[in-house]
Length: 114
Image (tube, rainbow, N blue to C red):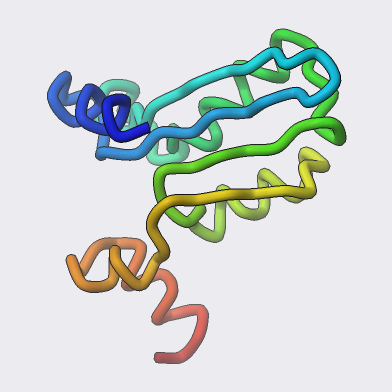
């Protein structure tokens, strides 16, 4: 995950985030990185990119887990829930992102009234 994050940032394709979806019954997996900058698409977060790729490959989302390099933002968390995935694992919490004063910080603060 860390290597993927570094590649996403080094290639200037997006912010340093990655996500992996694993379908339990088949052990198939999809990996994606943030492509917000390259795609000029503010919704091209790693989690969304992974969901899009897995959907095109016919993954059964109810049988999947998602592993993210960072805690999913509200948009990604909603997409994960709508896809039907019930397990989400992440390496960094939004509290770590808050220390860096990111857009994520501003979004969480707006939603929570902080």
